[in-house]
Length: 287
Image (cartoon, rainbow, N blue to C red):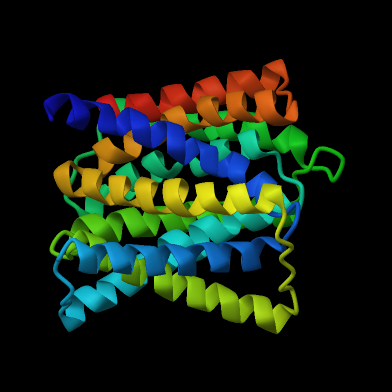
């Protein structure tokens, strides 16, 4: 059991980074937000069945229900939808992970006031280093030819804001929420809202193919249920900053996966930027 607990963060890194790759497969046969809505609603249904079958708590107080809905909208509505739509617009999967990996830095900065965590001189240096790294990765890529545009960049920063808010909410007010039923509500509210958005936009295309079937299966069972339960479990066991620090390992993993599966290449400037981002986050967390 102790070995499994120790391996949990590494398992989380691998499956969380695969989400950027899954997103690229996801919209080959479907509109991204509609695919994501179906994914979240399926995950909510499966998780509800598991919750009942395992006789886990199903009651939530009004406070816990409100917290679950807020976390769900932030984490799945803004974070996932922002990443998926940006990648649908052409943003490279690997490099998109670099922007959202700034979450540990933002969380550490906000935690000074919201969670009472101190910020040292080394951490300030880490913030600046990480920001410089993101600029090195993003600024040369702001053209339609490379996939990064002002719109896709804005979506990725919205995703960054969503994951940051969700992390702080989970640590500050979400620790008392029963894990399985709370996550079920999170999936359900985000899936329902994204379904409404898809219908209003008239973007509800979904073609069932071999690719879309296996992509949906992986997205529901692994990157939704397994990854999110692991993330919330880790947040309940450790500090927000410590858990968020895991995310600085996601960009290198996502870049490797995107290179293997899609042939996405990164210039030496981009590699320097990724390294600076990783170093900056590590400096913030470990100081």
